[in-house]
Image 1 (tube, rainbow, N blue to C red):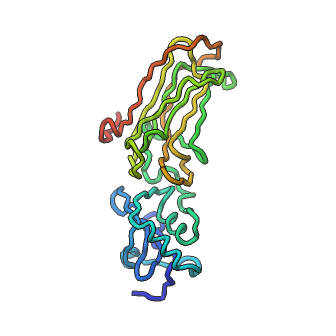
Image 2 (tube, one colour; image 1 turned 90 degrees about the vertical axis):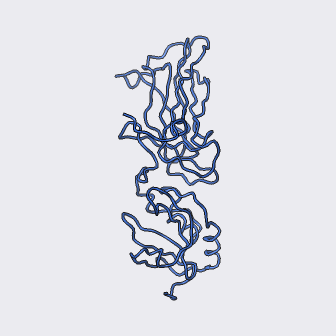
Image 3 (cartoon, rainbow, N blue to C red; image 1 turned 30 degrees about the horizontal axis):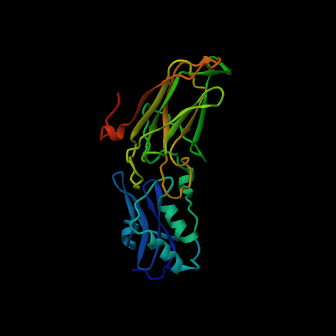
Length: 278
């Protein structure tokens, strides 16, 4: 067993397609196991140096740490945590936070936002995501006339990976900016448990009858943009299909009318399992 490694050192070892990171805590390595099994994320754990290297070797990166006791304490304070996310809370995020105090991953910055398969496409191959915010505002224009504003009678969206109820919603507005209502997308899990629905689908759509028309919708997709650093409850959500009525050139809005809720069903929850959609 090597004894020359400074306690608190940042260790890396090659994996297939990426570099795995850990923290040397003396005789052992604390790391985020991540996807050590087939698409099953593992927790923060402490393993032997040989197990960490996995037969591929390892190396120390960076300078010798100045505060090894503090680094070890940080690493061990998260033992058992099981909130691994490839792009937002991976093994490099963990190691750099322990050693540098910064939640950061260079690998995640250059990865595509769906490289983990966390999000699925309802109708391949494009997904929509926000960066730096969970808010997306959608407006409408007359087909063939991009500069001519329009209204629609209804709007819906397909979401993927809605884990927690209450964090994803759509609010509808009329031409005067008045709210026509805000509706929440049910999550696969009723409360934040740290579990990941992993590529589940949800749909929410509302159609307005009578005189009400939709001029703008505000979509809140989860707790933050896919590139966000989260604190507390965490649920990153992306969007797939947008479904709406034919945009019609804006006209005066008449008196309020009733609305019809088309549907709000977390498919991963209702069906209990994901099945191919033809």
